[in-house]
Image (cartoon, rainbow, N blue to C red):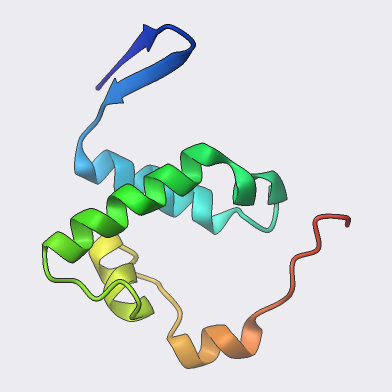
Length: 92
């Protein structure tokens, strides 16, 4: 893993497993850190991972398949997830 500064940006070389881990941890704490919802890093990371998953034949619109590909072993079933869903208000 490495980081390199180019102009005003930082680029990195990371393994897919490391990127999945970072995504899982960040996603698990969205309700505690609402500002992550608009963080370009998280948006770009999710897009990259979804592209990789789709290239491997994963239906990323199916939460169970997406969670399994990410390595979430304790993911909540979609039906239960919807029942427990809460609205996040950035003003709170």
